[in-house]
Image 1 (cartoon, rainbow, N blue to C red):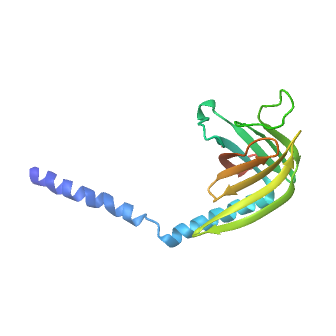
Image 2: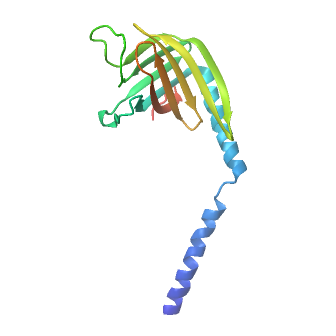
Image 3: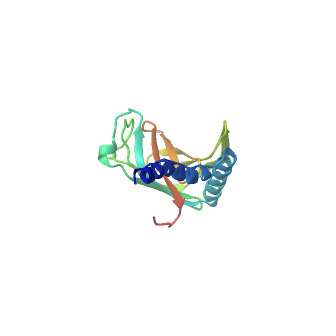
Length: 174
């Protein structure tokens, strides 16, 4: 019985290691998968029918704001960008009582879509300008595919702020 147990214990790691080794992806397969994800993201952004669910906020001050559970959304439909984003930072010129989040619902201006290649990684960058109620926002969305993206927002009346979120086709429920 001890011999059978000993043989089984020696055989078990070898049996478990074989399937894991067979499932490893080669560098070429990883590169092809990443290129496919970037191409899908580029097509989605080019269609101009997508939304971004914001799940993290990175204010310029560097303070941790995760305890406030910041949520926001950017929706791009054809040539209209609509969004409500939380804001944590310094405001320079705002009307009294208007110190809340960032809101806009207007036509995009100066749109630009480019595919950047840094070392071996590709990313899609979509930038545009959109006027808000009392401000103009320069928004840059960058994704490397896979649904995750980062959003950088520059305002005329507030400090710069960054967000990270999930890029999805318009109307897709998770």
